[in-house]
Image (cartoon, rainbow, N blue to C red; front, top):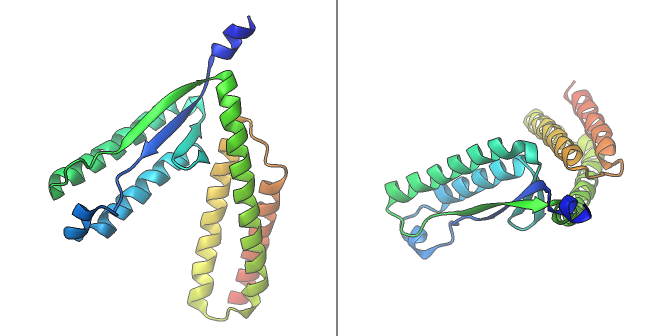
Length: 194
């Protein structure tokens, strides 16, 4: 029975290697920025669906499988379109989805949890520094940009929180602390803009 439990499919991992802008062929055609934007948008699509475990490995909740398939299809089509239009040979991403058994999923969740907690610590440090600097910012344009960035960070935090819950990953109260810090930053920005 225990062996049967361990073999049940739990989560998914996505392993990817995307062609980058650092290829000689690309440099000759002055496509670096175009390809960099494609690579970054592709990575964001994948990271939106799961949590980063290690470089180029994302753990994804099982219930996002259909959304993941659509994202991968879109990424593949985008790369294929660019390869055809720009006549780039061997310009094809490698994206593999691997079903994990329950015990395998736990190992990857542990890695993802460590990575996530480190990322949350970095975000706490950044927003804490920002809170100290807000009072010194007087330019309206900078304050508006800062407000937009904080709101974007709040949306990203909400997605991260949801994914962590779906995967059963604990954030040790760091998400709640970040919500408080972001709210405080928005209040200070609003006050500075008055």
